[in-house]
Length: 197
Ligand code: GLN
Image 1 (cartoon, rainbow, N blue to C red):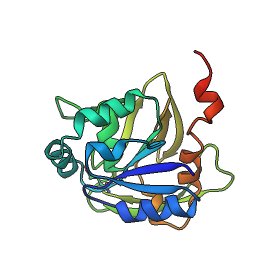
Image 2 (cartoon, rainbow, N blue to C red):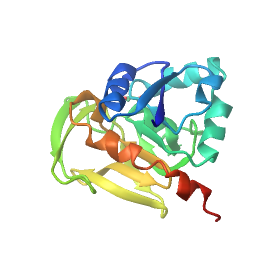
Image 3 (cartoon, rainbow, N blue to C red):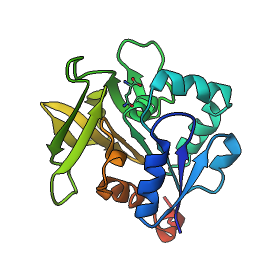
């Protein structure tokens, strides 16, 4: 069974755990560096990126997370998690993990519409996805290695770059598990992982 970690410092942890279980994989809560051992992939949930960053530093997780990213194992950031992954955050001198080839901007969708839902067309999914946005960021630009998977109102809200998947919205807050399934499908099969470069 695939083992998918969920960074469990703050935010929508339980919801991701539920979604992983619904996809037939095992969810592992990650609080300490040793919890990353033996995972096939890792999800960084939504919540509040500044708070999560503070906790990442407090739990000594920054370097271990960057090392995990170097292994090529898939990482999925939803909302605040996307902000943590991005190589650049508009208005900030330094990124957080800085591993995914996208530039993001926080709280992009205006105060009066802090939270909303929209039925979106997502590349690779057969039918629209009901996306929940909560004080959501958007992807200002995606690098040449990135593939745009979804846009809303002319803004990029989901992209993939190599082993990194990020979205502005919260797929884990609905009972539609297709995006979690898509992410789990990014885990290379053992045969692929053994192929020489
Ligand atoms: N606005 C939050 C941040 O900047 C993200 C919101 C969310 O994850 N729902 O961290």
